[in-house]
Image (cartoon, rainbow, N blue to C red; front, side, top):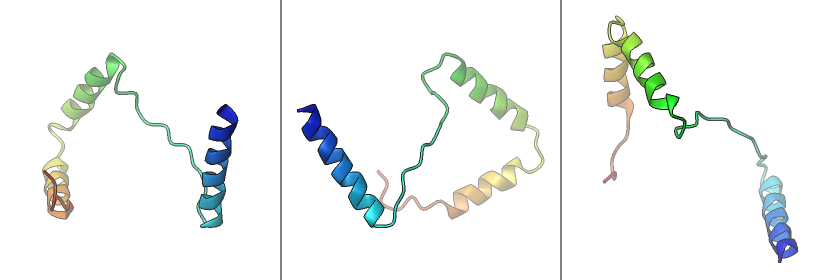
Length: 70
């Protein structure tokens, strides 16, 4: 059974490569770590007095497309 799964995965990867795609590996913050929320708070607090923060947030709100979100 593991061989069937491996064969299906390989077939899918081959099809994606044939379509001009390549695999990449992304490392993202681990939101399950106990220190994650603390670090988010620390970084947010550093921006509280930033002269550009309001402009950046206003820009993000302007360019964000939320049409169709529920």
